[in-house]
Image 1 (cartoon, rainbow, N blue to C red):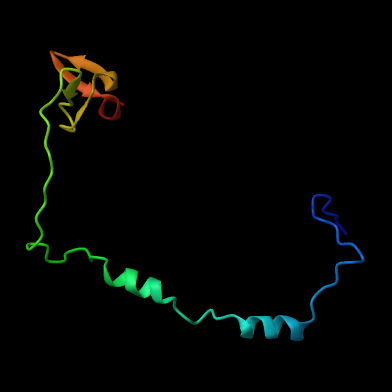
Image 2 (cartoon, rainbow, N blue to C red; image 1 turned 60 degrees about the vertical axis):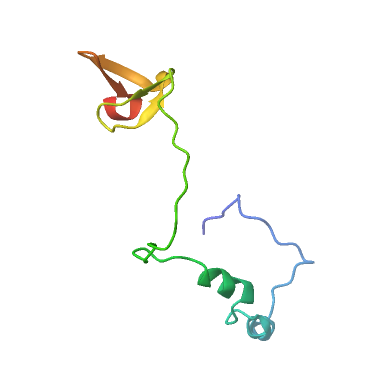
Amino acid sequence: MATDYDAPRKTDEESEDSIEELKTRRNDKNSGKVDEDEVEAAETFELPGADLSHEELTVRVLPRQADEFTCSSCFLVKHRSQIAEEKNGVLYCVDCAG
């Protein structure tokens, strides 16, 4: 028989719970009940494809800064430290160059 030397050892003080004790603990738990706060939070979530035409989005858009560039592959504006390569005057970021 193999012995697992990494497993924690049980002492005489630790006694295993009886089946009856485990059953009563399982029955005492309120695992079937839903917390009221979770229900309220779930009602505020918007599902994908929901009609958001009544919502107004306000975002402040900044022009590209002097220390930024636009990747010619993904067209994202990134910091100049993200330049991986330049081909014929076209810049590519580290995510697209690989």
